[in-house]
Image 1 (cartoon, helix red, strand yellow):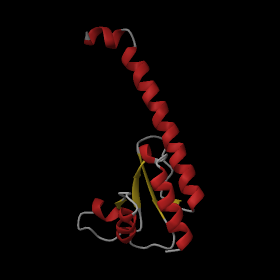
Image 2 (tube, rainbow, N blue to C red):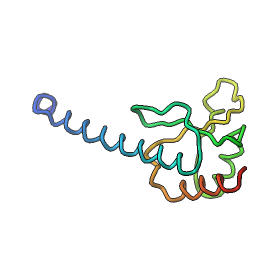
Image 3 (cartoon, rainbow, N blue to C red):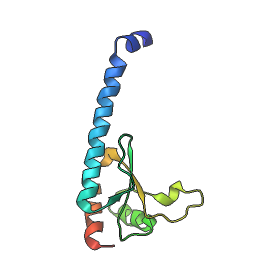
Image 4 (spheres, helix red, strand yellow):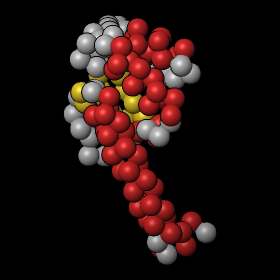
Length: 114
């Protein structure tokens, strides 16, 4: 069965379809970030994650605590550092670009100027 999947191109077609969906989600997330005024660390050409920040926020941990009240779990950059040093950046999974809770939360933060 594995031989047939690999030789008949089913897996390649599936991976191409999946790659296209991730590309669309990444573009959607980048658009959302631009809309709310976030700066992206480096615009990725592939992958599931985007690192971004609000210019006025120096420690994303406080932002992630606020977001939890809106039912949104954000990944502050500090959790990706060896000694949990504060970071203004957050890591976003592009799969959540269409979640209205995320859009509301980021819009509220942008408007509050926090």
